[in-house]
Length: 500
Image 1 (spheres, rainbow, N blue to C red):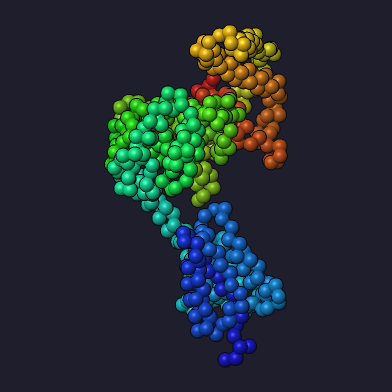
Image 2: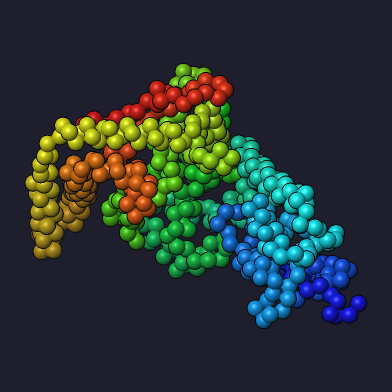
């Protein structure tokens, strides 16, 4: 067989993960593809490879895969070299999703006579049976990946409920076994907690440790984010947390880990409360709070996540009350709200179809806004302005007297600590009053139109809608509907309205 008799093809290789970043998996696949091409009478005229890229995860763009599709569809490279097919080691290196497989088949069969092969030999993609088998393979592959991810998550939850060690590197404060306290680092971490609880600066501790040459377990300098995460980590007192929630046992008590604690649970609760109070606030470099972020500063994906509350009555007669989380159900084409599993503090016994709940609550909130708009008069000026002006004047006079050395340090700082929280509270109330005044003057008809608008530039986004919902409601209790599939019943939604 001469060179001109060989079939010109491209080959494709992919590795989902490459921790060493040496492309060893891709090179091994390319070597196999060369052997396959030689055995089948083909000649590789171009190579395409996506290293360290998943073919399953949403949002991941495989650049070489997309380039290869264009080349195959055109039947030639950019320099005019003919391309008559593609070789891969196996189907799962090429695709993991049915949509990608369909696009590949469409490109390859755009013209007659193209070839496709893996290490086992040629495959006829012009046959409907083989195409269906390929699609089925992609579906099965996707299901297997989901099963693996689900098993991994369950494995982590089970180990957490047993208090087992978490995987990963050595945390600061413990020795290499991650159980025994380090005689130098553990006391430093304990002292850091005590200093922050006493009003010390987290950034100041970072500066002090860096000046002494103290490094993180990875050999880096300390920064505010790194130290604050270490201080608020429940591992310090022996607790375990997953996705921001403590792992508790059947009695609701935190599970104790299999390592030596550095501080007491009371100390951890105190420092956790301290840092939690800073969430949603602008924090200066010295750790002080400068002011609040705007409402719904974080962009949400679903209208009522965290606003809906589980209404299941537990065995002890109390209501679960856990905030429902949202997730998209691809097979159904809509999202659902569900209570989290007991290991995360919920009951896991309630789910509700999300689009129907969103529609009902949206109409209820809009009706409430219309009712208020019809009965409300001008809310007038903010009544707290005079009090705020007085507090600000007191602060100015206090600073002037301190600068002139007319008052002592203890008196000055004591008065500042008293006045600053009051001024912050009054400013927050003024901003809320101003926002309420603007919304009271706004036509509710326009809000309703924009709520359901089909134009992206005109439609209210999720954060704006959530602001109106939170302004009208404290929460919405979702009561259980009973066993089995049942039609949506709005009577099982119990909105807790804010007082007018």
